Amino acid sequence: MQQEYLRVKDILTSDDPQVIRMTAENFRITELPDQIAKYLAEKIVDKNNGVRDSISTTLILNKNPHIPEIVVPYISSPDAATRNLAGEILLAKGSEAVDAMLDYLPEGNDDDQKFLIDLLGLIGDKKAIKPILEVLQKTKDDNVILACVEALGNLKAEESVDEIIKVYSQNELFYPTVMEALGKIGGDKAVSFMLEKYDEVDELTRYSIVESLGDVGNQDAIDLLNEVVKQFSGPLAWAAFESLMKLRNNSNFDINEGEHLTAITKEIFSDGDIENKLYAAQCYKAFRDDSVMQKAIENYGLDEKLDEKLENIFFQYSDKFFEEVVKYFEGNGEEVSKLLVLIKNLVANGKAESFFKLEEVEQSKFANFLASKLNHHDEETRLICMELLFFLMPETALLFLDAMSDDPSPWNKLRLLEIIQNSREPEVVEIITKLAEDEDEMVKETANNILLTI
Image (tube, rainbow, N blue to C red; front, side, top):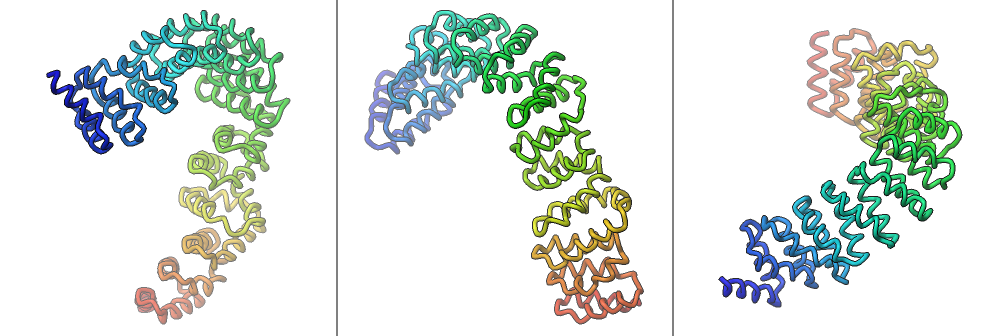
């Protein structure tokens, strides 16, 4: 057997990267003997990227339980690529690697400890809590301290709250990380500390506090978040707003959607990023406000997830939506296709009544807008404009039959014929007769068949 191991070792020292990769790949399914696993691990320092990738994949997939303890010493390598590759293997092994990592933890220097603690926090096995706390209590290295705090937060280690609070007073640079960790852990003591320190910290730390309160807040937290939204604008207020929405959605807190939330919703739709806007779309009462609805309409089409949330709002407040979308169309030209599809869906799902509540002058404005798009470059947009004219204002639609019949798409002409086939109005018969001479055979045949029934 030892001779077989040596033969494999010889192959792995080949100058041909392809030979090494093929050899490694052959060991992915069959459980590796420890000696072969050691030989393979030695190759993660190889200079060839393909070799390293193949070796790491084999070590990740293979079921030998000793692979983590074989790999973990490589996190001490001075070569960053080797260290990171060893980390990837350990992270992929997950809980299977935790014991080996904890055994190595006391042996490593500060850099090694930080590296391992970061990995342990990402893996999330609570077995690591006690050893990380022991490191936190002993270390003097700032980077290791921060790694411990962050990892304990990721592990939601309630027993670490007192130690994390002690860290807070050691260095102002620790403030944001401490607050983020306490926010992840939660509990009355953590929340009380965050609220107590809010007024004395810098804006970055305040941001960490208000962001964290959305996961762990209580009524006192809600009061603070409301004050932040009232007093501030920009990212800090947006973070407070998001936390309020999280508390309402996840913890069933009663959040008063007052004027301050309406104002911040409008601000977010103007200046926030997509993540901010996804939360803004959850502040339902804000959409009763004309300017908020207008901003929401302006944002429709930016992001698929946001569109889905906005569509729910537009269906819920369809009266307000139609009022504002007509105003929106007055000042916007080409990029309206998605909104028109939405309107068609609203009409098809019983919301046409909201359109008919508009003043007659507003209905006429919308009709003129639809008519102006009958020559739009997009075929589907022209089709939807035609359909909406007939569904919402059939008498007005008849005024634009010529433009509709000149549509370059035979499919749109066929749809027109389908819509008007039962009408006996003189202007309709005239258009059907015109289309009976169309150059497209399907259009021509369909129009002639309709004429036979007139």
